[in-house]
Every structure is written in structure tokens, then in C-alpha cells.
Image 1 (cartoon, helix red, strand yellow):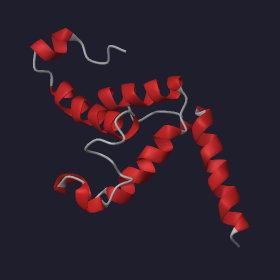
Image 2: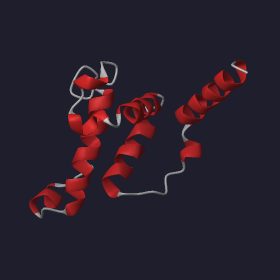
Image 3: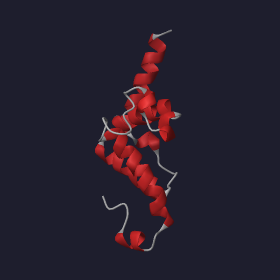
Image 4: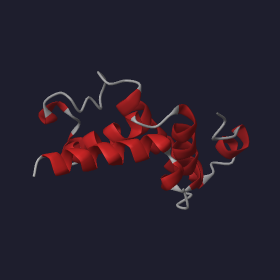
Length: 109
């Protein structure tokens, strides 16, 4: 993966200070679902810092779950670099998720 280099850490690069919390949130939502960012549990069990964002964290987790490994790596890299020019229409998993949401919305009407 190597999103952050040893040189960036040694130089106290500000990018590292932004990237690590972002990656930690992704890791907590996807790879440690029973941990501190367990959005399936009662929102009151979340850290006070995240409690107000419970519903947003659920949406983010659901979107991250539909990405394939390559797409997830692209998102993680963008979170480290601040790249805002990702072409999300190229993400197959995200497009499938959007289609599913659309199908659900029309079936409820």
C-alpha cells in the first residue's frame, strides 16, 4: 500500500496528520466492525466525537462495502493525498449500489 512514506513521517509532513485519521476511520468501519466505530450498535456506545455522525458513518460504511479491492485502494490513496478528482462513475461497485438504491426507491412508490 505505502500511502505514507517514512520520509513523510520523519519530516512531520502535515499530509500524514490528515491521512492517518482518515485511514483509521475507513479501517474502523470496514475491518474492525465490532470496535470503536461499531455503527450497528446503539449510537450511544460510539465515542462522543463520532456520535453526531452516526447516520453518516453508516452511509459511508455501506458505500465502502460495495467497492472492490482496487476501488477501495483508490479511495484510500485519495484520502491520503487530498485528491478530489476521483472519477466515481468508473467504480463498478458504487454504480451497482446506486442502481440498487434506485430500484428500491421506485419499488416503494
